[in-house]
Length: 124
Image (cartoon, rainbow, N blue to C red; front, side, top):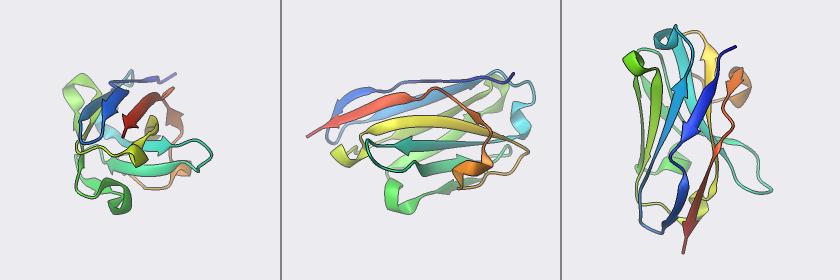
């Protein structure tokens, strides 16, 4: 059973930065599309950024607005989300997700492997 474990969440002030990390137990990580999603209270889960096994990236521009970067290190089976210039609207539970196959899609239903999530809180 593949497991994803997120870390790096926390409390930060407006304008601050956080770096989220997701570790995967999957041996074939380099051929696994990965994504970061988030869910705020009483809101639907939304995609933040996704990355293919080979490193091609796609961002939700309405969410990211040029502030976040997704990256991966296949040799360590990790994917990262660097978040800068955080705003209170970024407060949410952030989830790492993986899917079978190298591709990455923006639809959460395309991912069958999910981490437990990590809380990000941005104070005003």
